[in-house]
Length: 265
Image 1 (cartoon, rainbow, N blue to C red):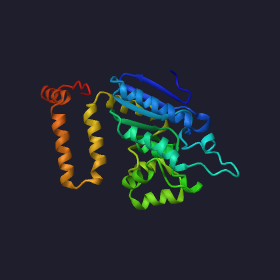
Image 2 (tube, rainbow, N blue to C red):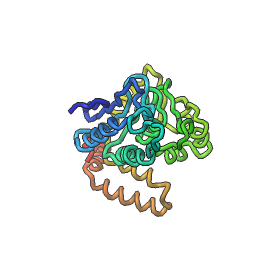
Image 3 (cartoon, one colour):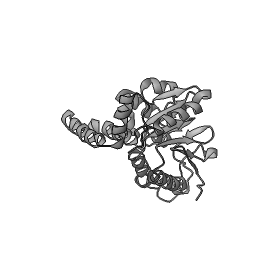
Image 4 (spheres, rainbow, N blue to C red):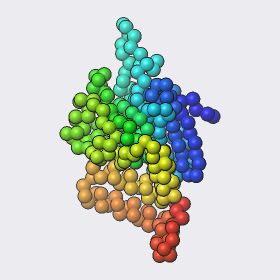
């Protein structure tokens, strides 16, 4: 069935998932969360998909939580909504789905990525942004903390000093500076943005999918491991991948000096 708040298109091994509430800067409401869960389930179950591109419609990527959503309205004389429950019910599952997706993910940030929208982008494996885009940790402006994994992603990407500055001051971070700081992979001229995203998606769609996902898992596990534990994890993944059809194909292609034909298996 078609979505009301999203667009999902699958072609050539690339699933393009577009947040589609442009009049609200693609901010989250309960309905969009429900559709995102369904869309990611579809991507997970479609073996033809080899990479996911996540982007936003209109002039923004995602402005975070829609504070006008019925579930969050403040009513005089009524206790305020349970914000922790909103995180547990919607944002936590969303980030964990992305982090455990069986294909690599690209966030194509075409405009402002604010609040949970910034964290959503950072939950993807690669983040590419147009140079006119920016990232904003807007939580302190409304008396909250960075959620949706923000307090986990930011210090690891840019260090504690910059993470604290972004979170406490809630200043916009232009895409080019975000790339310079190592928060994202790349900032691209607006006129070249779509072509660059398409090229990255095409490149990953013919790559050894399982190896890319195991790389993600190993990288994310490393901060909680000793070196010895990480070496053991690497050995386990290398054992698994060494028995894969893609490894056999990669070695054969290398020996024959041809382009490998990976199947993601």
